[in-house]
Image 1 (cartoon, rainbow, N blue to C red):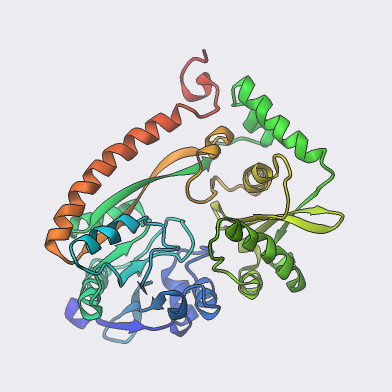
Image 2: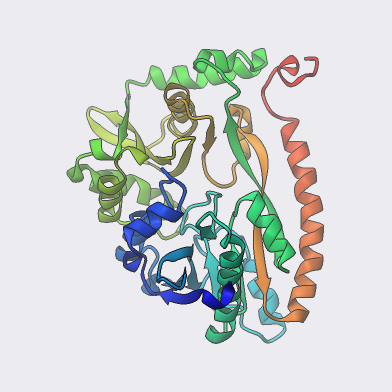
Amino acid sequence: MTASLALSSIPSASEIPRAVWERLAPPGDPFLNADFLTILERHGAAAAASGWTPCHLLASDADGRVVGLLPLYGKRHSHGDFIYDWAWAAAWRQVGRAYYPKLMSCLPHTPVGGPRLLVADGASAAAVRQVLLAGAKALVGRLGASSWHVALPTDEEAEWLQGEDLLLSHDVQFHWLDPGWSDFDGYLASFSAAKRRKVRAERRRVAESGLLLETRHGDQVEPAEWPLLHALYASTFERFNNHAAFSANCFADLALALGQRMVVFIARAQRVPVAVAICFRSDEALFGRYWGCSGSYPGLHFELCFHQGIEYCLRHGLRRFEPGAGGEHKLARGFQPTVVRSAHWIADPGMRRLLARHLALQEEAVVDYRAAAAAHLPFRREATGQREH
């Protein structure tokens, strides 16, 4: 079967037909579609000039029909891919070797898990995956790269990749999960009394601040508003002397293309935006990502980034909310520590052995950390099958 499959490398997501994305990617996914990656590449957020070189792999059958897609980027830095491998680059330097370039299968600037090897269902699916896998490994050699990384694949993919000699790294994100609460008050009723009072006090401070809060989908945001909203987003990066990858025009194009798949929470003072949280959604989940604020407003970060998102999920029947990477402060709002994994193909056998030992220790530490963090969730003991002290 593999002999009848042809593999090609595509230098731009825009060259992949929309019909291919619609056939191979999960329906309703706000990131794996004909628009998200194309727009990021067109506006430079995932382009060669910013250290991302698209080299997406397509597998086609004997009739020329695309049956597999692996989004893939050559990278010369570790920003925006969320595998946290800066120390690995330092280890390569210590032994006189170059870690960059590396290859990444990921969602640029977006720490959201999901399928990475997009393969059509059918009897040939396993063969297609093998061709994509072999193609990525071969590309590592042709480009002189150190490695190929698959950021945040599905659990099924992670297990399969591990069986194909990729190493697994582990991390913790904080996810909100809805077992069936009817509204935000019902959700808070599952908290201990002290934790419930704290959240209500946070929300009350925002409600009494005079700020106007609104929720809009991408197609409800006027293009002329994006420069102001973008300035808020960019201010977060400026505060930490970092680079904002997305431009105002990039956000405007995403809003137009994704429509209801983009969700924007805005706080206004006298009609002027003073804070924004830009999210995306599928049919099952909300994904929070980009935040910015022009001043100091007590409780507003928690309100726009977490509480408004939870209310949106409850209104729209979304059962999961992933508000981005990191952040132990999410525990107090009921976001549960969740172990996520990434997979790594290391070309050099010696460095692979060294990294394997490191990752085995990391896994133990991550599992311990998740358990310790879960002890600080705000829920009543009886809500988790235990007694409240």
